[in-house]
Length: 318
Image 1 (cartoon, rainbow, N blue to C red):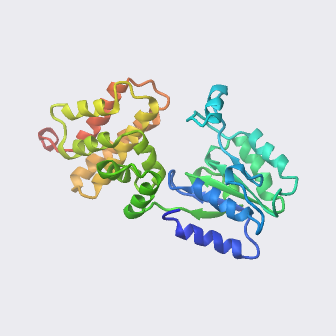
Image 2 (cartoon, rainbow, N blue to C red):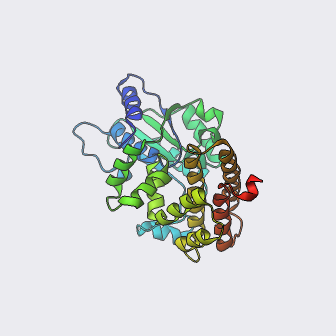
Image 3 (cartoon, helix red, strand yellow):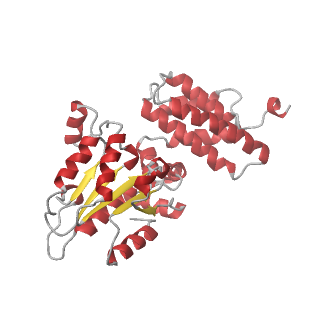
């Protein structure tokens, strides 16, 4: 993995010690690679010299808990290797199911790992059930809790775990990570993905997979040039398609927010104030979009208008 040498150093130093802590929170913004780290770290943890080891997703001593498919149709998509929609939360039944398996000894060695991705998604009953295992962990069992917003976790959970923090990658690390994961990306598409990811390879890859590179470039122009004749807003709508789905619209809002953040460093104080106001409005849209029934064309016009509002016009100067 690229860019997480510090996290690996802390983890391996703990493994080399005589009393490794049983609970770990892998904390950092979404898309940094925490879940991939958890799988690789769990594979190292449970491995026994001379014993053949299955891949982490097939290993009997690595238990992965994540939100289940939202219904039977989505479960079939998962089983067929297709993209699928998940439930919002990890249920108490999932936690209890794993706990029933923890009363037996590990299968291939002396240790096993439970990965929860993400612990932020645990429903209330699931958190309470998990606390029992964190308070009295079975011998040889280690918990790795992926957390995108550690502040959402209960203090009682945080107090029983060691926090391992993950930081955004720098642009060179991002370029290496994306080139390795998506070698087909190059030129402007790669540059746009790196900028949109803001140090998070997962976010950059999701952006690239949606083909939002052209939309990103238009957003950058909106912030730099404004849009007095609405032409750039028209181009933005065309770039995102006639009827973009909710996921694509949410990605567009997030991309617009990152374009504004990137513009802060090269702006004067008056422009920064307008950026802050536009960003706050986009944050409100991001909170409303998952549940409100927005008309896509109007929402894209609003996004474009907020980006264009950053540019000082005669009216704003008056």
